[in-house]
Image (cartoon, rainbow, N blue to C red; front, side, top):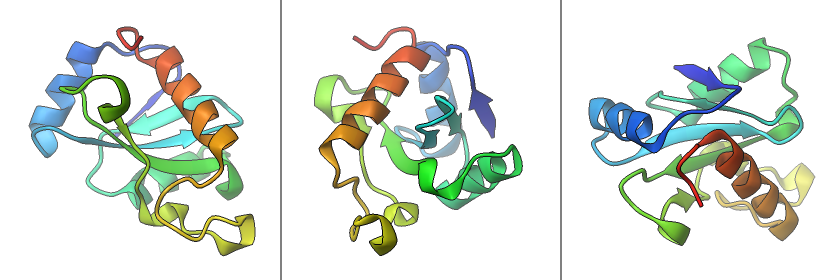
Length: 115
């Protein structure tokens, strides 16, 4: 597991993906601190690491990255940690459009090869 505070390349992401699932990387984004935790089998493990580092639960959202894909196929909003009726998010996705856009923006900032 690692926390991406600066930048990581798409090639590095591809290598990480190949080491775990082959084509996918689980990630958790802190939308307030603009950091991303990657490289674990479960979103909950990444969530736990960020909570230990001082992140707040309400700011953490789980996504999947497909580093061998492009455009809208690169990010998938799907994680059990996203089910939060208290935040009006009743699915595994991220239902709030502005929040999805913020997550996409953070991912583009952290991964140097994403357009």
